[in-house]
Amino acid sequence: MAVFVKAADLGSFTAAGTALGISSQMVGKHVSFLEDRLGALLLQRSTRRQSLTSIGQTFYERCRVVLAEVDAAEAIARELSTTPRGRLRVSAPVTFGSIALAPLISGYLRIYPQVEIALDLTDRYVDVVGEGYDAVIRLGPLKDSELISRALVPYQLIACASPAYLATRGTPRTPADLVAHDCLGFVFSSGQHFSEWRFDKEGLVHEVQVRSRFQVNDARVLQAAALEGQGIILQANLILADDLAAGRLVQVLPDYETPTRPLHILFAATRPPTQTLRSFIDHVVGRFGKLPSSGKS
Image (cartoon, rainbow, N blue to C red; front, top):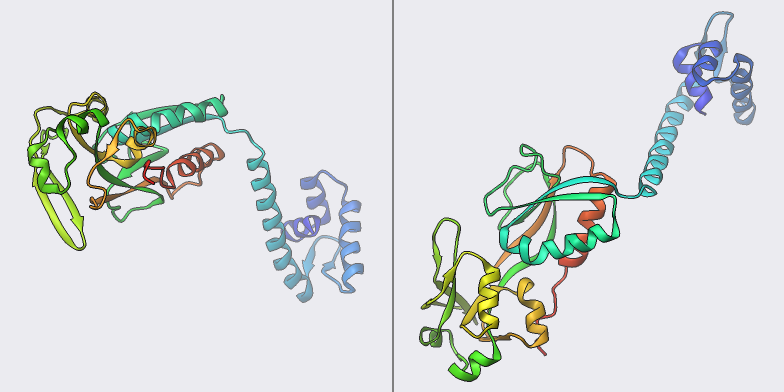
């Protein structure tokens, strides 16, 4: 089929043979084989040029489709057999990136030693294409864009504290009880203090203005403070899952729901993802595409 298509494209057996690196006689034998197999004339021969018959035209068009599919299948097979290598530039929110994503990247790099990853941690909205990122983890609703997204576990905040703190100060039973507790406050990069904690139960919203004797703009510091018994923390289940599962932290107000924010990994739709990028995205989705254990029975 490839020889026949080339002969039809170039108009002569000689030109096709030159392009394919075979003799014009061999080109003729390939075409004759097809004609014998089909029982129909595909090319009208003259001393100077060949032209397609009506049957040949129909067969030629279908051959091009078949050959294109063969090329695509071979390209996919070659790419799938290629070991991921090269450099990826990735952006992620500061808290998620430092606590959850960075350890995953370390594990990924151990699996693929020929890959390099430059991780940029920022809470600002980044332009994936304009700033040259291969992949971006984005927290919050997605805007209309030319990006492809894969959903990760929603970013759900939970309230918890260390067993030592609860043994000393007691366990809150309702959101209103939090006003009598030390609550560890998160400060955003804008300087806004996250002091209003919201809980939902049976369709009713409970908003509590908590008191924070200790505020910081780094969730890791808040996590360490909670582990040391300094107060109640409100942070993402995804980040606190290991401490909850190990009993180092205990969830409070488990009968109340907290708001969730969508979390996605994004990449540009304008260029096909490389095998390296695909393997990284699959690795991230494999870890963060399902809910971790919260330690609750």
